[in-house]
Length: 146
Image (cartoon, rainbow, N blue to C red; front, side, top):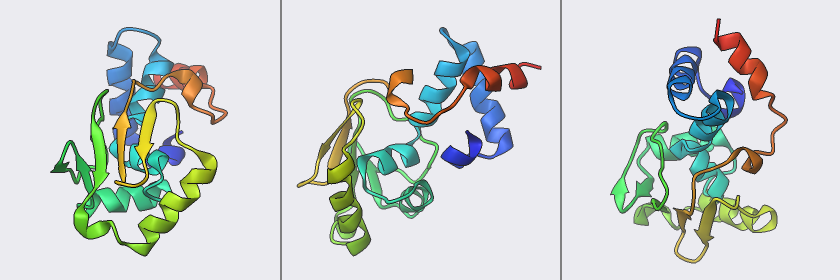
């Protein structure tokens, strides 16, 4: 799971500790926190063709959250947040190609995309059913609970 989301061990342990302290099922909390990272949301919206590319878009200041530039890849988006692309980036050919490719695969139900204005919105918090990867989060919880 760390490799899927591009998270290093220390940061992953911090996510796990926070998920463990939160109400609800620890494994599902962990998955939802990882899914709510800004770099992942940029990838899910189709603004980037891969998570590493999305991370770079964010780090270089090409992504706006609620109209403000955010350059921290692990920023946690919340319900109602609007994610967009900076004006100077909108005509980038890599971005245009990525947005075109997402039309075929679509975006998750917890996100909403306006392809014309290159803006997306978080409609609701991500849930376990929204994650299609074959992840057995209970095994991860057992490993990190030691």
